[in-house]
Image 1 (cartoon, helix red, strand yellow):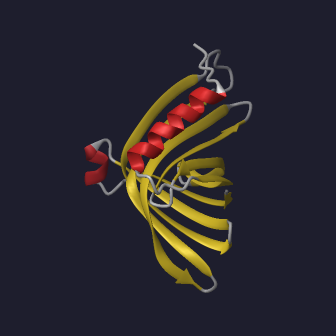
Image 2: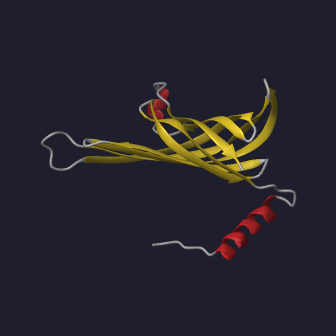
Image 3: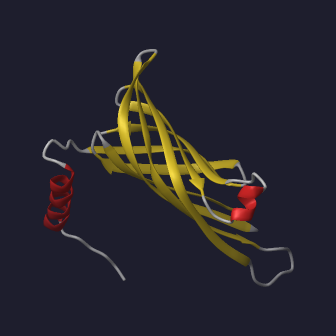
Length: 171
């Protein structure tokens, strides 16, 4: 199934979002690149993008790695309620709290094995964000999703979190 929207349909959809979020909404678009901890706490490259206003934002990321024996992909989507926390050195700091989720796909193939072993899982829960505008509009960002799944793992203090660090620009 292919989803193709015309420019007028996109404008209509964005208009509805702005009506629901208030007449004083100011659009914020962010793009960045960084690292996340989706692969057993080993940081792998990711791309990040977000859309929202000065008071809320929907942010997503995609990351992955691959070689001849394995691949590992992670996708995340978060919603944050954001606010200005003040200044740090010379730049503004914004913070956010919200909800997020992630989906992970991975595969591993042993030598001599005809088929790769594929797995997928996901998690979701509370999410947190801190962003420092080092040279406005450029920023340093850290986000965390506390993955709430497999309660026995939490009892053993083995949390399934997704933490990402990125450098980006707010447009």
